[in-house]
Structures are given as C-alpha cells and as structure tokens.
Image (cartoon, rainbow, N blue to C red):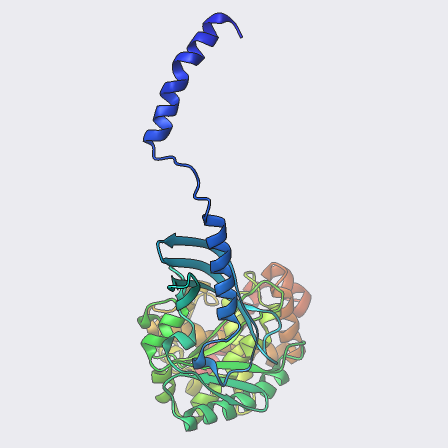
Length: 375
C-alpha cells in the first residue's frame, strides 16, 4: 500500500468506528446462547403434554420446532412450527405456525405461559375452546361448542360418505375423513383465514394441499350455521361432495379445471339417488328457460367464494351436469380417466386421450344437454 493510501486509512478508521458505535452496534450478549437453549428446553417440555383442550383427540408426534427466540428481561417469546398427526388419519405431520410466551421464575427457570397462533397464521380448532371427539367407523369428528348428538350425526354421515366417494373414485386414497365443526360461522372463517361472508350459506368446505402428493391434513370444515339449514338429504350430499375432494386430492393439481373438480364431487354425491336435473340445478334451469344458455363451461373464477351467489350456483350446477353428461355418454371409467389426466396434462390433451373429443365438441354436447334437461 502506498503512503497516501496508508494515510487515508489512518484518517478514516476512527471515523468509521465512530459511525458504527453511533449506529447502536454493541458487543453481543454472552448470556444469549444460554437463554436461547433454556427457552428451547422449556418449549420441548411444554410439547411433552399437549393442551388439556385436546384430551380426547388421538394425537401423535406433537412437537414444536423453534425458529427464533426474543428475550426482554424475564419474558421471552418463541416463534415455532408445531408439528403433529391425528393418529390413524394423517399420513404425514400437519403444520401450524405458533408463538409461545415464556416467563422466568425466581429460580431462573423458563416456563411457557401462553401458546397461540403466530402472526398471520390462522388459529387451530383447540384455540377456540375444548375439543370434543367422536370416532366413526371411517371418520373422526372434532367439534367445539357442539352437542354430542350433532357430532355423532356428523360421524354417521361421514361414515356413509366414505364408501360413496370410494365407489365414484376407484383410485387409491386413505378411505377415512376428518371433520372439524367449529362453534359458529365466524369461528369457521377464522380457521380458514378468510372473511365470514366467503362461506355464508355454504354447508362445508375442504382444506388441504394439492400437487399430486398425499395431503397430510385434509379436513372437511363444517359451517354449523349453513349445515343446520340443510335437509337430511342435503347434509349427506354436502358430506359426500367434500369427502370426494379428500379422495381425489392426490390427483388434483393446479391444472385441474374447477368445473371438473367440483362437478365430479357433485356427481359422486348424486350417484346413489340421482335427482332430476332441473330439481338439482334450479338456478341454471331458470337461466336456460329465460334463454341465457352458457357460452362455455364455467371458468375457475366462477367458483370463487364470496362472489355473486347466483353465478356461483350456476357454475356448480353446470359443472355437475357436464360430469353427468361425460359419465352417461362416455362411461364412468372415462370420467375418472379424464380427471386423472387433467391433473397432469393440458385439458385438450386429457380430453383427447380420455374421451377422444375436444373442448368445442364437449361444450356443444353440454349445451344441448342443458337445453334438453333443463328447458
């Protein structure tokens, strides 16, 4: 280094050190690693005994993976990922972001004093109250604020839904279903992280991952208010529809058109007692009678929660009638084959391979069926 540069370094070094000090940099707290380890041990101890609100729930693998610790005096908070399984139902651990609060007692020991959802993460069912569990032959129903009779009735309905879904979907799946029943519509919406208006009037929805692999945490989540308004037959249709979504999950991807996914689930739900098309599709029937024949199969956006209710009803009804047509004209096996292919191939390719037809031809056949069945 030449003399001029050495002189500049000598001049600038004190100034740089002063800037670092002014920015608030300080020597690391030597006690931080020890506190971090103590907090992690306290969280591990907490995980050894799941909340009392879950006393009747078959749990396994309950653990917290701490991702960060923040301490302020005798209080600390830990960000963690909760992992657990419902024994006999989940194929892999389900996950949930959590924030735990800890305090240090007079003896210096850290203890968890609160455990809740992390910022931005939805609550879990047990965050809303004590969870009651009812086991069916093929189902597990978990509820908060519900009567034992309500949960037992749901378990019986879910037990009937599982073989109905299996009859429609011959592909491999677990053959069992988990049903969550929160106390209110607002509580349901909180579990799903959406506004309550998105689910108003609906009987239930299904959660879970898509992408061609097994979803460890498929859950049918019941809207207790919408479900209560349904007839006995309507409740069974809803449970079978949602259970079919669970059954077809491994074949459902972002490629799968919503009209095929939702239409197939309704087709499965109506197979045992097929209603007259105009009876099961009253909103679309009314539109067709007024001359408003759909120009195309329903777009994915038409199925979005919280939108125009009539438009969504027409989309669901049209999707069911499309799948009903495919099964009647090409056969049940061809409909299943189309569903399998549509999850991994472009729709035109799937239609060609499964039905030896194309989208314009299918659309025209569907429109003709709507005229005949609904008008």
